[in-house]
Image (cartoon, rainbow, N blue to C red; front, side, top):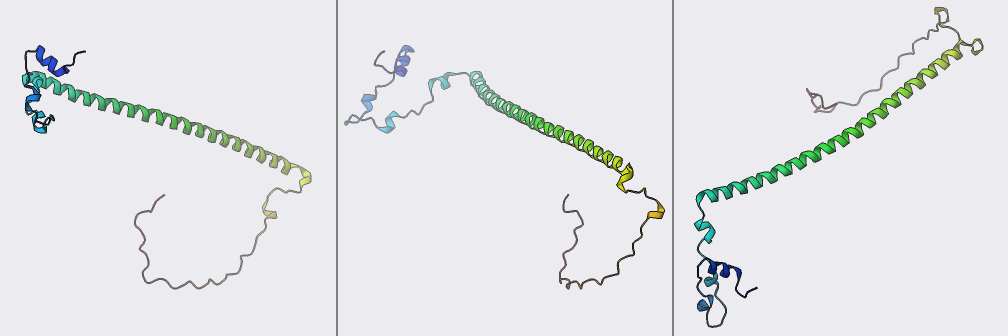
Length: 165
């Protein structure tokens, strides 16, 4: 490895020569800030043709577009996996509810059948319904309603649309 910095060595190979920085340094030995600034464009940009710059621009744009598409694809994939998992959980829950419904319907029918069989036995004291066994009840006497409190001065208007379901 040489003691010469890489940029100086590459400029020497190309036949370019940079002015010596030591000639611009003040007497204290520290280079001034203004002397180390470059005001010209780098050699690559100054010498590259327009089509090469446009290709570099197209590459930058396509890199950004590619990154965006990859991010969108990963987002859609994650959303798809998540929705499939949620659908699977909800479907299992639905199957459980349907199974419980079938079991409850079967248990209800078994109870109805058992009650019907017990009602048919002669020792239970149950009688078949007929008009001769019908009991009529007299209506209860009318009660006076309690006085309602006075209505407020500004009753709320009834909404024309339902509030919600």
